[in-house]
Image (spheres, rainbow, N blue to C red):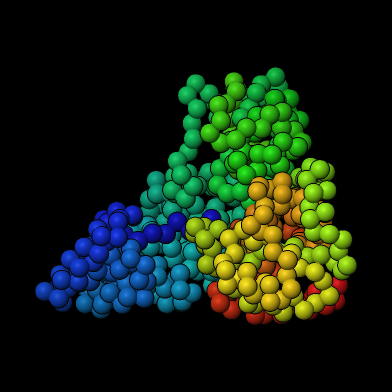
Length: 447
């Protein structure tokens, strides 16, 4: 998940195209009437950004800041866009300019920490978060950003505690409650109780955290696991789950509940105690047999891969890779199978031209994906659910990571404490993945 920064705007986050066009026309007219009024330029920038015109929005925010260097909101919004464009030093300067005129601007200080952390200055980033928390103890933004820093650095004991701010930070929807039922975050005995472990966040998150279910079962509970529908059939074989239901299904009676991603806090998990029971997910043998027949006997090593994630994911532009950059791998001594679900016509044509088998459109759910992975000798994936699935199945998987990877991949290591069979290739920047792919190609040649 991304950082908790946002634009300062009174505009609704979602508007119809007609409404947005009308607001944009109003904002442009206001700046023409009073070009020396910084507030009009700020409003124009907010509207341009809502229209997806980030470069023009930055120009408008910069014009507002030039007219009034002490206009903290304009400086801050410049910083937000500059950060997302990878101009970290410039973003830091803008956040500091905002704070110079408004020292208690909590979002500016919190986002300053994000930019400093991205530049590698963890200590300064942590200081910024702590100052923001001291300034406004009820603002969730610095708590959330501090949680991500702690987890990225492997400080799980404190990181899981701060991670509970994910609900208030507005990154994953509202916290679910169940009237008449008590939440469980550890401490309360579970023996003889029924606990609901409910779904949250994404498919990869569910796969990653399913490893904790046997630990809950070992406390004497009857475990009901709520799953996202694409995972339900696969999760029916998860050890420790007495019953698996899909989101939206009627729930059975239960005594306590816990979000799946709060289990590490409830169980006191540290980096050293992340459980690894070996493969904890597997495909039904009958489904594996179907895919073995469909794919036929492999003459060489079979490599399954995906190159992009869900485009609706907040950080997808940073983690997905242009398919063109994977061509260097296709020439190695292996047969490649694409499991990409949302391949475009252009991408499918490129796959065909390079002799790559494409089956993503044939996969109905994650049991299909798991069955295909069972037929593969290796998997290559960007940071998306397939990487987690391969890791949970204990399959050899190479994970191609952006320059600033998600917290779960930690900071520097090539190995992962979550998935012992994973190898991490770090350092990709948006549009500049060539070095990562060159390293992956050399590694393929040496296999």
